[in-house]
Length: 449
Length: 130
Image 1 (tube, rainbow over the protein chains, first blue to last red):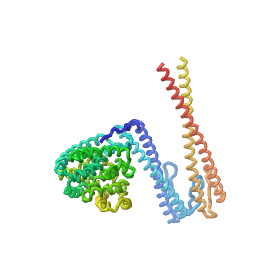
Image 2 (cartoon, rainbow over the protein chains, first blue to last red; image 1 turned 45 degrees about the vertical axis):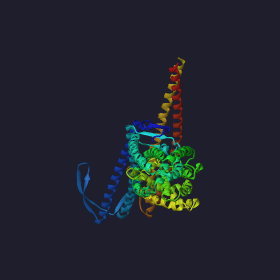
Image 3 (cartoon, chains in turn yellow, brown; image 1 turned 90 degrees about the vertical axis):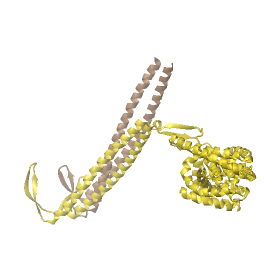
């Protein structure tokens, strides 16, 4: 799955030196400590203020109070508090005002409110500082761990190369490898099953469909295989449909692995192609074209699709091809299901072809995306089931751009809306086949969403 | 030898600039502190003004001058507080300008120091090669 894409690997340690990160953490923590002290002081003020308010409110209850008056450092003498309603209140900055008890209480409460607002702002400050400190801390920890930032150029390649989606990816590379290996092994199993199934299903029809499909698939390898397998038997199609439903669930889970699968499926699809006599030749030829086309043609159609190169309609050496190409972009998966569906629909591949073209607009691809997803899930399940599904699975597995499928989902959703419009453009005939995709799409939506 | 003396000169230059920079930084820190004090005073004065406004006519206002509480006229007290507020705001603005100045100088000094350092490094590298 890993494409030799040029990229840079920068260890976090170099970007954020561990020591400096620690120092930053310390600095922020010091600031936090300071602010905390301030907060304490303010809280003290507020407490004093409240006590004072209570006292002042109680004093005017009596005309005079008998109290023990402090005298010097170590003596008291009994005395009397008079004028219990007159207070000389400090307003601030050395200014005092004579006020009654009630007025004094008003002043004090106002002062208390000002203090409260100050405390609030202090607290917010502390919160921000804490967030900063935690960020620094986590960065320091990451730097210590030797986390690596990997930047890869985005290379527009065939679907198998979707991995090279260039994006800043902070990832642990090993994890991906493990998954990849796992997926590869699974793909191998599926492939074997498919080969067995395909051998039985091969027939003239298949050839015919295969060629047409192969064209489409060749571009996407995956697509072709699936198509070929679909064509092989109607029965398979039915089962496939069933599987799709189940697959969808699997699909979600395997999304991660899908990427790996994509590459694998690619292989498998290729193998499947070989089985069909005519298909092989045509497929391969087509695949060549496809790849070429894929590389050259971007997925302008698949605006939503990021990873998978969308085979442009330009290629349209065969209608199917063009269609397939478009679906391929990340949507390859989509296309396959779409293709399959078309096949299953028992409509001639021609019907599908027109469908594809509209899809290439990406809108069509959207419709497929929904269907494709299903297939993916089917693929995984297919390993055990019929050849058709198995054939599909290879196709699915080969969906290199599982991510793309993911990306598709988002795009698909959008497209789905567009689909109706785009579909109208393409052909009403395709409408019926499109209906199917819409179904999976919804499922997909649910799953995704 | 000439190169080594040149290097030494450059290094001395670097030290001087570094001293200047640290002085500048101290100035900036002082400026910050004074600004903080003034800001607090300004807030307090505004509070006093508010309270004074709430006082009705005839209420006695006293001013603490040293250990003596002196009775003051309400109007007079108001005027005084207002004037003080204006004075403090003006001071703050002046301080802000100075702070800007100081920061600019500091940045330029930093750049100069960096350039000096680079020159020294290149010289040393050249000397090492030779």
